[in-house]
Amino acid sequence: MNVAVFFGGKSCEHNISVITGIQAIKAVSKEHTVFPVFIDSLGVWRTGKKFADISTYRQGKATGGKQVHIRPASPYLRSKSGRKLFKIDVALLCNHGLNGEDGSLQGMLKLCDVPFTGSGVRASAVGMDKITMKRLFMQAGLPVLPFVSFTKSEYENEMFSLTEKIKNQLRFPLIVKPSNLGSSIGISIARDFEQLFAAVEVALGWDGSVLVENALEDFTELNCAVLGRGKNAVASEIEEPVGWTEFLTYDDKYTKKIKGGGRKFPAEIESETRDKVRAMAKDAFAALGCEGVARVDFLMKDGELFINEINTIPGALSNYLFTGAGEEINFETLIDKLLNMAVERAKEEDALKYSYKSDFETGGKK
Image 1: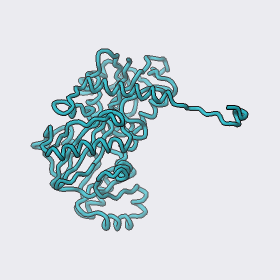
Image 2: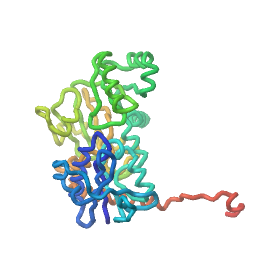
Image 3: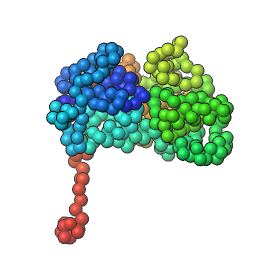
Image 4: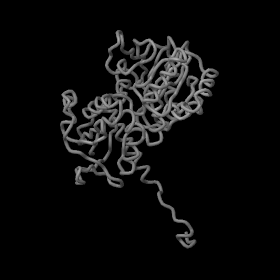
């Protein structure tokens, strides 16, 4: 098959997406022909052999190549002039954050009849929106921390009532998050109202909706990935990120600048807790209707578990959570599974009915 690997993107998580994309390109089976589709920080799509080489990005040379695009109802990647370059049999998605992980790219590929890995449009969009995501988790009976959410307009016009709501429903310290960002960007801790208002201004600089929730202290973070579709989904081994004081920042997660930062893998937890985390991760995956691979992040305090969020296109596609322990799935096998699931889903969707003729159109004849 012709596999187009999409990565990069117009997102604050652009650089992390590049790393995931390059890793995935190297893991695609040699049975397939791989085409890198690099989306630069302005949203321009580019392809060419150099975009499959990490040195291109380290040397600041991720420009040029062929500018490409796709068109509705056509699975071909085309040059800037419109010439067909190759048919995309399946798209392997490695984009993190907005304009890629949030359902926008998935929707475009769906309109072009291109099978793609990971969750569909709805689950991708919901998984990116922390507010809607938490509401669905609550509806499914899954535990989340108490929170208050609001839009920029509500904050500007209803600040007094929102302040009262936060006073009555939450307690300091609070954590303030943009609703539609990842990698801990735009997130702040507030220990009083002065810090809260400053944190909200920071968050609103990144997104039009904000989530304010109780912040835990002296907690344990646990991460678990889920792979599959529906009832056939399996949970990975569990990791425990370590070496932070309040929450993992962007640098903590990706540049490891903090002293003592790292991971315990597998996490040093009791078997009962391990089983509970894995079961809840699968329930969260199902609650949003996710497919492919996703990572569910938990917070644990005094033995009580809370679901923090789900990542529908996790860094490195969470390959490391399936290796060295647990399900023992290497990266190449993981990629093969994702590609096969994407093709299977596309076939199922193609078999559905998409047109209906009314009695008016048929003259009452069936």
